[in-house]
Image 1 (cartoon, one colour):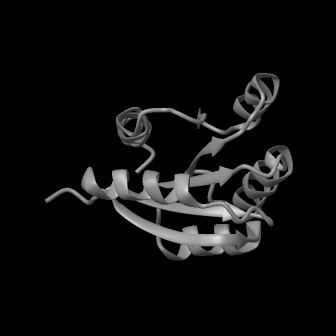
Image 2 (cartoon, one colour; image 1 turned 60 degrees about the vertical axis):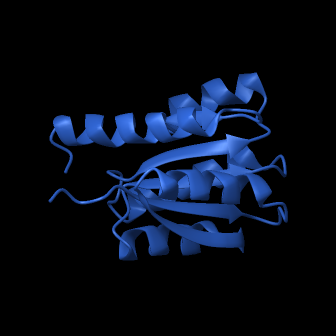
Length: 138
């Protein structure tokens, strides 16, 4: 039997609103993925260490605080330092369109704004992981 897709969902920084992250985590779980919900106020170090320890395929960051550029950059840099760039990074929250382009150029693979249907998130995560496996990444 094939291994389930493993996703870590986390809220970096001081953002204290996690309803959207919990909705997405449940949708991914209901779609058959294994989800580790790390919760609120996590540091990039905690997020990356947990992702590596849990052998996840995807890190999903939920950011509503406006600190998205810093948090995504820090997580991507820590993944690189740990030689774990095979872990896909996606995110959601309030992210201005101009920053979306920068984040995608930085290495974030997908971004989901408010109101994105959960089915779209599930399909995107599945396609990203399947594309990585097809390319020989796992």
